[in-house]
Length: 130
Image (cartoon, helix red, strand yellow):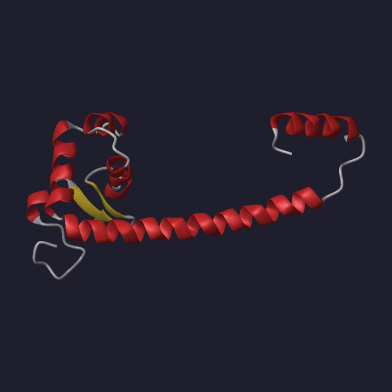
């Protein structure tokens, strides 16, 4: 970034607000990643809302926005990798969860639960989720 070949270096102009942590780029002194902030930026949330949501100071949000804009190309590439990895993890855990749901659904009802299961099925049918 900014002429540095080492991707772990943060330009000195932004070192007081942006740090590279084990989870990637973050607001210095917090666990708030720039990728999380970028999700809100891309979804069109106002800067004032993002600042309040994450309890950031005016200086922090201004410096983060400046960092993202100044290093747009490198940051966008890194952000896309994070988004891709998150999507892969979501798909993996969705598949694992579905396996568990399928296993539970295939289990016979416990004795004595016939009435409550019938009521539950009626509610599901009424709601259109059965």
